[in-house]
Image 1 (tube, helix red, strand yellow):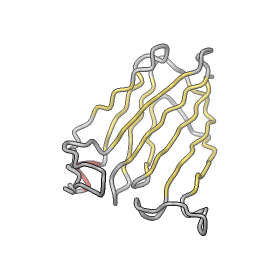
Image 2 (cartoon, helix red, strand yellow):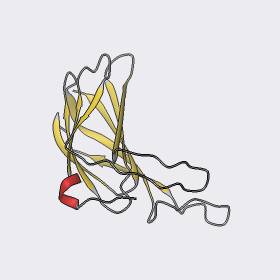
Image 3 (cartoon, one colour):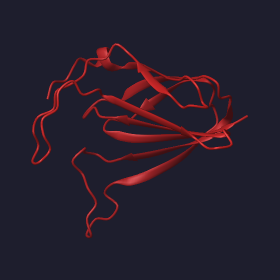
Length: 144
């Protein structure tokens, strides 16, 4: 696997262009990585470190943004700009993470990987989110 110097991958920007259609585009100067073959998982080339998806409910008053940080070792800062959706200042962040990207839950250790939920009170339409290395984060927003 190819790792890049930290400054090259620290700043990303995600735009939710239209909350009615929910199109998410990640704009960044970011160098993708090439994975190695791991068991039955094939080798992949030019894999982005960040994946982002968004969904909005039928009433268009709740928006959820799921962001995956695939970097094995580095936290990444994500500049998030939300257009056509005016979020209230309070929301929730749900994160799935563990100490190692190779961790998994077993019958003996059911809590090795845990979901952590946090309330946030400083949401705005242009904000920065810190993504933990090898994590899945869901940002749950409600309309003002």
